[in-house]
Image (cartoon, rainbow, N blue to C red; front, side, top):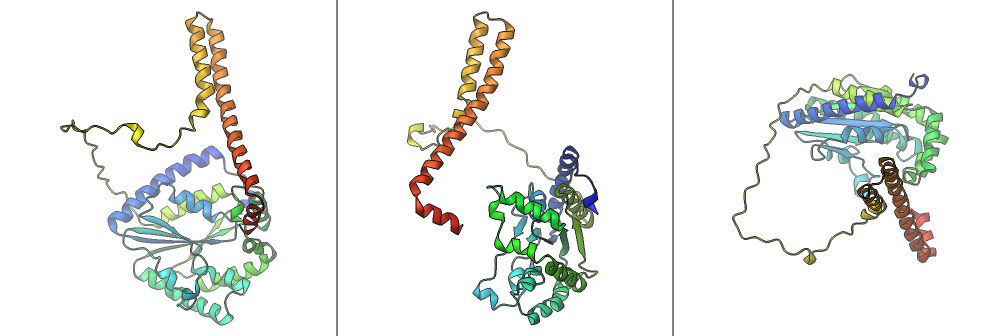
Length: 335
């Protein structure tokens, strides 16, 4: 559906996102005041946009109220437990929101497709999951389950984007890339999962995520519309005036402390000099046009000094890498 729609306008997206995030903060206040418990399950294809949606939801929320749980593979002790046990430990107490970045549905997805569980374990999960979720809802937990859907072409494009971006290469793993070669297996697993676990008390909601901006707006709007929250009057504490000192306290000299070096001053150095030159030119009676040119030079100088600082830092890191030699290369391969 969303694949035929144009990309959402950036300005419209940012304006609406800000409004929605303000409402999320209000909803958080309601959760704290009423002792509500919210569980949000985020599932979907690899690179479907779950992580970026979670980031926008939690951006302005209190991490003591709203936390994200992304559990690693179970350890040897957890493998001997009831499958749902390690997830139960992460459920919210009164006044908390928990977002599962992947959840107990790993068993119906990656574990089923990759053969990490037996057929008997898989069938038992499909039987127990609806019962488990009904128990959560009956106990008063507000459970929301979202499936992020993306096309195979868009998924590959996002993988390629991660591959070429050093800041996001950590997001790529051999397991993620299996979702390309096993696309149809994952589709079948998802279809069967929906058949068994899309129940009236805990339904699945599909988020079209071909355009990440649209998906973020849509999922946050839906979340806010399905939670029965209300605006709560906030008791904002008053900031007191600082009282006058009545003691003879004197701050120790700065020389006694260790300070972080002001590396940022390097970025300002050329601009400050250019501004001083411009001020001196005006003082000496130079024409306003020339002073404006000096101001422009000041702006250019800022960019130039920033580039110098960046080059200097990259040069340092390059020297460190060359000094480290072969061991450093081995470490890269492992990572």
